[in-house]
Amino acid sequence: DTGVSQDPRHKITKRGQNVTFRCDPISEHNRLYWYRQTLGQGPEFLTYFQNEAQLEKSRLLSDRFSAERPKGSFSTLEIQRTEQGDSAMYLCASSLGSGHNTEAFFGQGTRLTVV
Amino acid sequence: QQQVKQSPQSLIVQKGGISIINCAYENTAFDYFPWYQQFPGKGPALLIAIRPDVSEKKEGRFTISFNKSAKQFSLHIMDSQPGDSATYFCAASKGNDMRFGAGTRLTVKP
Image (tube, helix red, strand yellow):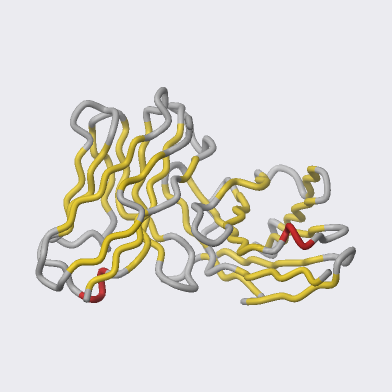
């Protein structure tokens, strides 16, 4: 499978615990995005990497959230001290290009449930 | 805060009919307008996209109509099939800033 891969697919955690998600983009893609999608809503932008540099962060990304892309390949999204409001689908997308508006390919997402 | 408004929330169409989903945006700086299709348990997949220098784009049974002055665009699915049943999201972007509509759940009845 050469698409965007996310792990795990599902995560149930207790409130207050830390969780980490992984995204493996399409191999030659230099851009990587994280989105959050709640039920009945469209994806909301969280953060964006070009290679290993985190270039943009949404105001939605509180200080409990941190993302890394250490070698410009896979990325991790960590949520510390999870809250019930963090329950959502976390989507990763990747794209290739240095210009604007190149097609982004989404992974299947990680569904987080905070109990 | 919601920069892209999508309607209807849900749509039921008979097989062979035309499905029409509408979106309106606020930011005139947006210069790329994609539509995504999402099946349950899957991530969104790009269906078709348009730039504001054209008023219509057609790919197979899918057509985007774009009205720059009204800041509106719509997706038309001709000859709708049960396999088209999914959630459709419109989006508008400028550079890496992509804003999505809330989605339309389409059900095509056989």
